[in-house]
Image 1 (cartoon, helix red, strand yellow):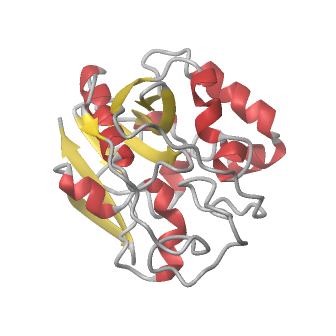
Image 2 (cartoon, helix red, strand yellow):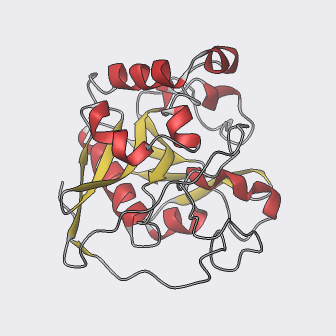
Length: 245
């Protein structure tokens, strides 16, 4: 699938702030490493990676991801994405904590060789800039037990239900429509894979600050704009949304 989304110039804001409106400051010259917030999985904050920006004339495209090598530049070497490699929702927490980064990356590589591949990648010009994890809900064991992702209305093993579980946006490419393009690609990927419903577990960015560390799940506004409907409110600031395909 190819989405033609024109690249826009970044909004400007104080360089020492994490994001517009934030009261948290970074060391001089530093920028956030990933769309996945530091500490989201309980890890220790690590140094930030510098952003890389593409030419303003480039076009944004999305497609199914078929190899972990496509994601090395997106996940980087620092921050939570580089330590998780999209295994947090897939393996039991005790096992997750015993694995090192190399083994988690290897596990994602094996998963990406399966059919259907469990995610889509965004490309801007010749640069890989983002990733969205999407696949049958039954692949994500943690969704069964986590209070913010489980719903009585959903059968854990229903093959018709697919899930969007996370977004990773490369440094320097946030707030330019990458997440919107990735979600559109995820919807098409799920539809072509035979899904009847697509489910997600976004954060309501208007909710308490305490839940904003889960923005790697995507914002509620992002999903509502794509036509998803709220089917559950498992806790303040969190939602479960669904789209019939």
